Length: 181
Image (cartoon, rainbow, N blue to C red; front, side, top):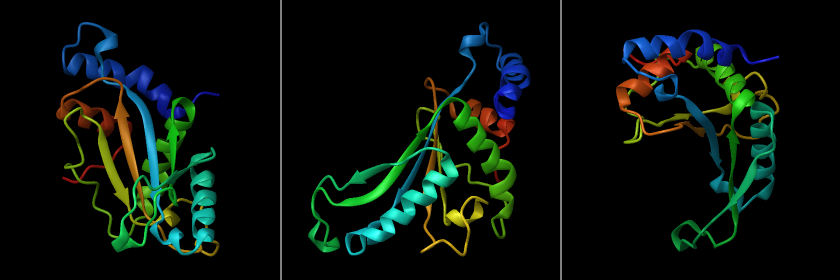
């Protein structure tokens, strides 16, 4: 079974964007390549069990096993040594990417307290969008009772090719991302 959001992109959003921006070819239309979720656990330097719970939370909400990231260089002010495990990341593509985005836009974001939309300032020069969440417990997969500590995460939406900001914003808006007015 194909993801609902992927089918909506193929049938409605792609043709809408093609007519709106006068693309001559369907292959010119902006398309998502991957979604990258990063969760930093700086406190794991002192307590490695915190990293294990972060990996479990990220695995539950993404549907695949995260990669544990290590520090690339030592920083004495943070008591950080090179090679110490300090975070985890997941790269989602294809069906899992669209399923995660669907859950993020329709289930998780409405659960954020005092939510008025995501910022318009998260775009980079290539048209990719990065946003931050303050807690992982907005996802139904992560129980508030089981969470050892409330952790935030960064979510990056990466497009296949360099796209102007307004066009990538329109793509994400049509996929269901609630931007602030």
